[in-house]
Length: 478
Image (tube, rainbow, N blue to C red; front, side):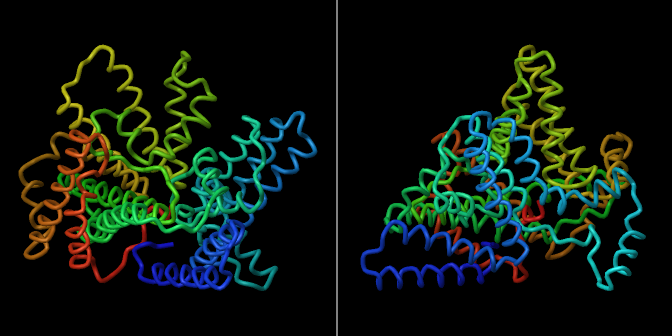
């Protein structure tokens, strides 16, 4: 579901129109009717994404529910041991589609080309190779949500909900393909009492989140993506420029998606968690991860970090490193993602070691945190391992920062391009100031961006400046 496409809004409005017509025709629709309508709408929108996305989601969601039901009914006295059976089965589609080729070809270095050709010859059909498989949209997000649901149900001995309520929890369409990764305790109770009720306050609040989200995505992220050029490996200034543009783009893109999801849900009377809270305003690495992709950070904290012993054991540094390496692999199958996770793990370890003995001024803390975050983004977008290490070497070579390299920067963007880039960077700076003021004055992320006087301006800028060519949400790849 690409919220930046007109087609999505046409399908959504069409689906809601059908639901309202049926509700009017039924006259006194029951709660069950509304729940069935919500589930049907979600599955319809998911099917419109792609058939394979719908199929794999259905397998993971339905398999998780009935696997859990089997454990509780047959093995209810000692259900926890069956976590080690059900969870690997839940993860199997994710491991196959996302990591199969990387593990077999890159880690084990198996020659898959000859095996693929042999399989085509035996079957007489053109079977896609592992590296050609299309990863089902959102598989990382909804798989982790279902794993958390199984763990929460068995460990905390929560009752198994009705299948319809569970499926609405599992397939709530605003957040299914790119989060937030909602937990049972927050979303399931709302699905159990869901009704289609249109409240003006909810719609006003939801519309403001949608406006900010689409502005972030269509006006800032998509336009900054046009100027992103990762070609240089020898000029440190150009590498930093690419890091800056990518870091801004991925933030505005992913935070924008999350805001639109939150806004649509709010219009329907459902409260989703805020997945981003102005992370580039953070004063430390620890604070950054409390504000960036919050639902994933909390997932790894509760289901991996704390079970390993958390920060109260002597090997706490190992726990942090392991969690962030796994987090890097969650984002993508490649050594760059592993390095990205390891770097952030190192930042957090150094932050914890330095915190008791070094009192960092807020400005210095912000500068160091931001510099580290944008440096690590290089590992995220540069998928060629050899080129990645060459660029890292350039960044950490003092002699590379010479006047000739600096003079080459303006030549990267000339004429109208340089003016347009400066305008969008200025716009991003203004947005950052408003984010910072929202936290400093109101202690509420994005408060000033969602004011009634600002929202129409954001809508106007979005309509005026959105590129003609649409860029898909970048986190759909993860």
